[in-house]
Amino acid sequence: MDYHHYRTALTETLAQSEVPFPAAEYQLRLDKVRQAMAEQGLEALMLTDPADINYLTGYHTFEVSVHACLVCTQEKLVLQVASIETGAAVVTARVDEIIGYRWESLDEIITPLADLLTSCQHIGIDGWSSGLRFGVIDALMQAIGRERFSEAGALIDAIRIVKSPAELEMLQESARITALGLETAIQGIRPGMTDNDIAAIGAKALLENGSEFMSLQPIVTSGHRIGVIHVNHKRRVIQPNEPVFLEFGAAYQRYTAP
Image (cartoon, rainbow, N blue to C red; front, side):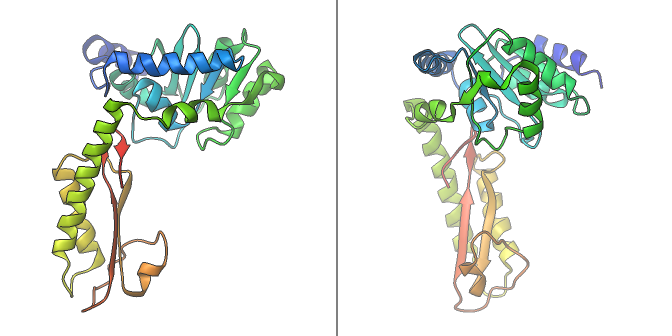
């Protein structure tokens, strides 16, 4: 697939059509981040956590297993994603520029980032982000110098933790959907059913009431298995008078309230 043509076609018809919040909300967030960067002497912030990228741009996709990066300076906001994700970026992200790369080419990741950051002497990164891949940051540091980079994960965390009224509305809606899913699943529990049956009832209710892809798949266990954290339904038949554990998490515009 020619992803350049794909991106161009979407840009002409659907650009930013699924950005979750108004532009003013994102601008307020960006202004706060840039002010904090200036106070900490950072010329650029390189974000790789999907939640951080979503917070500043609206970008969202279910594919979070590949490298994605947001470079924030005082002048520009540039999003780098895999070529197949450029469509989602065009439709959901409020940024100045989108850069695509092919999975099989590390140079297509490093060269654009080096070009963006080469004029910056002080670059903040989130070294604890699960999205920061060693191969990418190591190659980038070799390209422009390790001394430029410093830990700055706390910068955006301190801003994100204070929710705006618009974010609280999203969380409330997510909580409403989660509660409906749980209540529906609870009402459906009967001896002789399997834990999978109850998970299916709950998942159906979450989706019917507006959940997107969920923050976690429905967790349902019964009997002795409820004492084991983070195991899941496994076709076990529910016995009379035994406990059943449920944990659901709806997502509404990527905000979750499990």
